[in-house]
Amino acid sequence: MKDESTVFKTLDLPGGSVVPFPSLPGERVRVLYGRIWLTEEGSLRDAVLAPGEEVALGTRGLAVIEALGPARIELFKSIGLAGVVLNATRRLTRSLTAWWARQFAAPTTRSSTSYAGSR
Image (cartoon, rainbow, N blue to C red):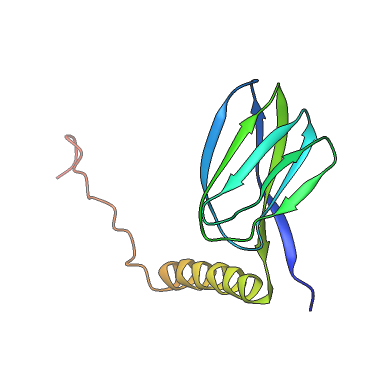
């Protein structure tokens, strides 16, 4: 099965802004408009990206993006089969927990009130 990716962040960057972020192998950066410079901790390669270009991150560590002018970028996370299964398991666990709580919740009791005119 092919790895799936999902956009997890879209950023509008003013020119000259610097954005450090933790990187993982398989994540990707795509430029929607503008130009950026990207460097990764532990990598000897830097990348200058223009609109429509993207790069896959290759190291675990710190990555830094600098906008060379106003830019918009998308950051993608890779969610392979293991990630899909993990997300489905979490959703199922939350649903079952909520169902269990509804089924076995203590019944609510209404407080008894006395009326002044009745004895």
